[in-house]
Length: 430
Image (cartoon, rainbow, N blue to C red; front, side, top):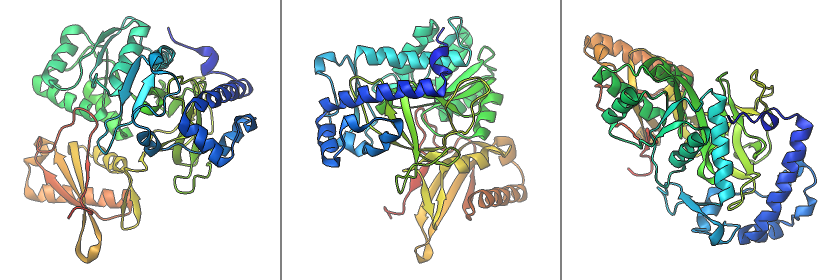
């Protein structure tokens, strides 16, 4: 079992002493990275000046573009002979981010994921279906080795071939599954078409994209699971950075391994508990690729109180990413807000798409295509018109913005096996 009571319930003073010691060790490791040597010298910051955790604010931020500029191995702090694995991000725009791991890194990483899965009650008696990409994407192999560390029976199912995924759940008695929430929706849809109730499933682990509480309810009802949110980034090992406990009220950051800050994404100034902003993380135990104050781009906040489960350090579920945020007529809009409104309506199906265009008089226009469940789509035109207006009204109340809503037939919108791409911003292309 990977219930690490010592670190997961550590008293504040003891925790801060551990974090400070590991922060200083990280500052020593980054001296092996030319980027950090030059950056710290340019900023006039010396490692010996970091005497308290608050002093971390004297250190400069690291951004994703910095990592891309160091492609491929410019951020490695150890010789290549000590790097036993390499992962990369998707690299959809420009060069990908390259991440290296020592043997110690792989052991630490799989241990963190094992802690996550143990926290929600998974044991060696469970059968685990890992329905994510097993290649350069960190989510697949990360969960694979974490589950094996617990002793679970692991099915490295990968993505796609959804009917076969359903058959494996039924035939092999799968009790826990890991995939993106958008793919879980598609899996539920296919299972219903096949007449399968996925009776053996009890636990769903979903991550890699923001998803709402309304989507959680939908997944729990249709898959018969308890749905848990998983968070991580390739730059911080991968998944395993934070995870929900059975309380399902915020995610626990493994604070013995990560030093966390919340900042104003515009000014960079620190924010306190209860204030929503951008998550900044300094990993404290990474060997191959240590980082300082990495700006994740993800929007969350620190909770002010401890969790009833006994573990400390919680962050709120993520409301989106800084770079996913749409600014429509001066109003900030996150796709997760739209999802929350739509999934709360029983007539609405699993899929939607958002299109942003520059309309008349150069004003932004947002159009949302919404799939309707078959039994509602076959109704009278007047009923559909009333539903359309109800969706428009609910979105206007939630977003403080009027949108155009187009109802479409079930099965007509794209399905996603990996991360979903629900927003098409055409303002700069037309």
